[in-house]
Length: 442
Image 1 (cartoon, helix red, strand yellow):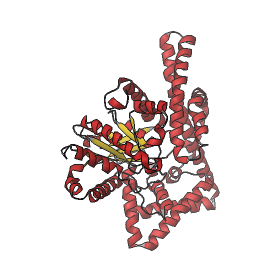
Image 2 (cartoon, rainbow, N blue to C red):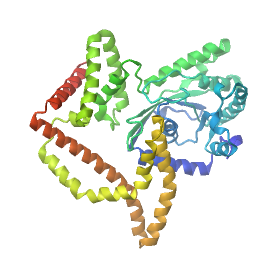
Image 3 (cartoon, rainbow, N blue to C red):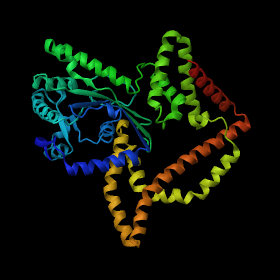
């Protein structure tokens, strides 16, 4: 599979994508929540446009939640070496040249356009990250016009008969680089580019700007967008304080709860600036004090921390400690080594990409090695197979053990704070409860 036939179905790519998707959806993330796939019309050419906050994990979020073999447009500088470019073409990626790549190279975008037009003629989906580069904060930045230009060029090449759809895709990560987090993917209402054909024919610049503004508006509906730069930290923290416990909710996902919360806060900023400032201040106070006391918001949100339950949980942790040790040791190379290496990266936005990529790469070595060892050292065959299945299961159980241990230690810490009437804890709990109550009343 190469550039000339990149739009065709590739069985080897299908197998690889299936494995990458399994690792992404069930191993790396503990839950992937997807909404809106039913809105996609695969009988027409689609351009998928996700927000870009978490480096290559954004592209993977789209790739691993759709069963189609999408074509991704990526920056051209990674295609410089022929060997690398062949691999990227095999992975169904096409280059896009920017001014920083040299003005003389921009002409090569004509070749990319011809390839993307051929792809769209076959109704194979294309994915473009319209912000151009990533940024690790929850705000949609100014979109580049490239995605709109490609859509209009496809229409123009078909004498404006091609019904191109741009699908806004909202991505929300419960944490950008921690393991076993929650990813929410929302496919928004497709934008019919044909609605802007008349404007584009009369004034191309106006058509590009109107379509870009429409895409920006639709993207903000399906992602967490905090417009306020001055109070960004306070509002972002408020999301966790109020809605953190809903991270796993499928019926009413945290992403939508966060958008509703942000909308209320924005209204409060206009209608009652004094109350807005007080809420922002308390949000940061709760963050700082909970960090000093080593307490999470989920611990603070629990009304009771009965000693009986904490003792029972502690005994359970002691009894199941061998499960944690076994799961950690068997999965140490695949998960812990990459985590240590990834945290050394200068650009924090690439931590999750590096962590996922290294774990996935190591799995191609460790998994076959475990298969060989299992069937050589264990018999009969069904027992060896059970041992293989037990390895990832024990790894996930080890992670759950660690989470329970943290909750139990936090609960014991709160129980001890209450027993001693710790002044700082009482201040934190009162501020936390008051903040949540005031937000509910808004």
